[in-house]
Image (cartoon, rainbow, N blue to C red; front, side, top):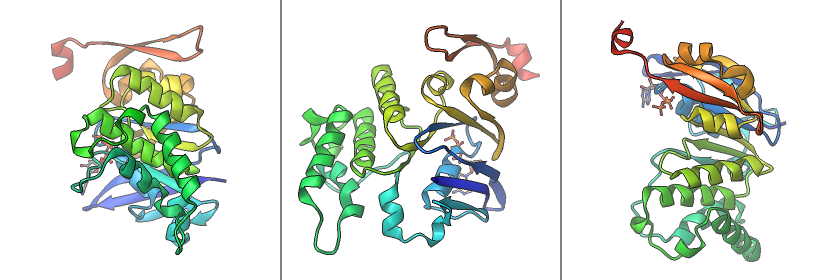
Length: 261
Ligand SMILES: Nc1ncnc2c1ncn2[C@@H]1O[C@H](COP(=O)(O)OP(=O)(O)OP(=O)(O)O)[C@@H](O)[C@H]1O
């Protein structure tokens, strides 16, 4: 049992930006949400997180409608890192990461030792120990992104929702972050643009186009040249990497005349 979407739809301003999508992760697996710009990845993550409610269908947590789960319980179970998360307040990295502990605090405060341990571990795992005292406003885009991931890890959630977590990261930190996420004993739904990263780190992928789920399965099953051409309108060659068993995708540019057809 875990966080599930059952035939969810979201009418946003008169248009279905998510249109009858179901997602049923196995506990502990990493699911990649893939699809072109505007295909509904962020919208689906918002529905799964409870930030928005579906106009049809239901999101469930352990078979209960998420909308009926007490807020604190949902906040303990689900951690979300959205795009463009920012703060105007003067906080240091450690303060940001400690925000992840708020759902665990009771009326009389929380377990301070557990909080400190969770924050320290999250800083360590995201490579931010040396930056712990640094002001948020002095961080680079990639460091901010890692601080948000650290906040989510400090929450020690069961379900992790990540919206393009690698978009500001250099290649080493992209690989480190997705390795970390894939190895966590946490069910993760991650929106990604990089198909090779999805192939390397996701147990399964769900492909969205125009708000609809058009394919789902393991990366090797789904990421075929035909599917990539249909969804992204680009030509690709897909080879199986013998050592990792993952598909590797190389893109071939289309001639200008073909593009404008
Ligand atoms: N506030 C809004 N009101 C109405 N429609 C919106 C709003 N925000 C986004 N949309 C629309 O919802 C659709 C899906 O957007 P969404 O951000 O979920 O896509 P995405 O797959 O995450 O895109 P990207 O890869 O560009 O981040 C888009 O067509 C977008 O224009």
